[in-house]
Image 1 (cartoon, rainbow, N blue to C red):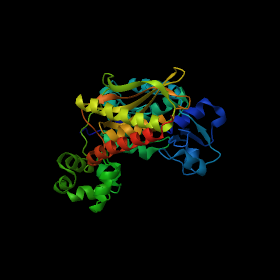
Image 2 (image 1 turned 135 degrees about the vertical axis):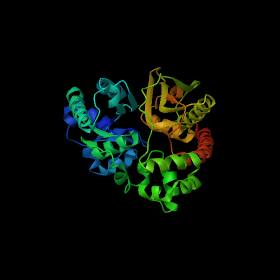
Image 3 (image 1 turned 90 degrees about the vertical axis):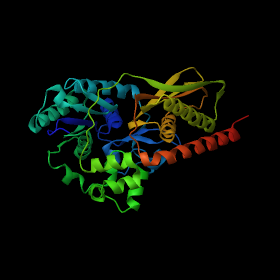
Image 4 (image 1 turned 30 degrees about the horizontal axis):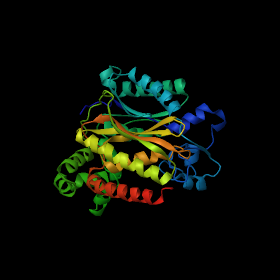
Length: 379
């Protein structure tokens, strides 16, 4: 692991909502919620004005409307977001050949590889200049974290939000991480966090105190060992430039348009399961979930969601595809549905402790939803 804080993590602030505010001056300074607007819709992003009312991402839109009834509720415009993302990623690539996008609004950059920073002072200067350039080019704000590793840089950018910069000085990492909750560390999802809680481990410092042997006993060799290393602030993962674009996908065309929403959801769940089977057969995982919908009028829509890390978990893929479906109007009928996974990798970075349980639950959910769809399909 390097000794200088030259790994940068950029995270745009409330990206979708901020993009809408920049595009529509009438929305500036107002509460804006972007996401699915139907009865099962989910919030994708809420502006900071909306967050003051308690609205946050992944919240049901109906609940958000109760908390912030006067907010502007908008369907995502991914074309707009991609255009802005390309501008931001272009600025990052001017700094270094090693840029690792995680999503439309988030990326790691190796400043040392770009020759633009070799110590804390120069790294901070690059980070501040980047934030100014992003604001000038896009009108949006981004938060920057700088540290000696990817894990710490991401934690720093979260600490910097909104519209700030935080540099974690070398030698201070353990003191910073110690009091933080275990969910701060990559790979600790709800299931792993709950398992650690039952063992009396609530903070990163308590993970370090428990020792590697105890963590291996609780979580298995691979997950327990890696978690112990991260609790000691050890993270050797390099910044990896975006690999060649590849994907795994499945789709079905229907002889008769599907009008029933329950049936559409069941079909998407079934396609997600088939997609993961192909993904695993190829020995891959993927970071971006893609939903394809061709409607009754032959218009074709694609929606995508980029996860925090690669996955081959059928439950994760199924739930992401279901969220994407909530942002698509299918009331006129559907001719084709497809689910795909892109941003392929040869490893996963999910909540590993939960994965085995999720596999069984996903299959049961698919079968249950398919049965429900068959029972409620219109004649």
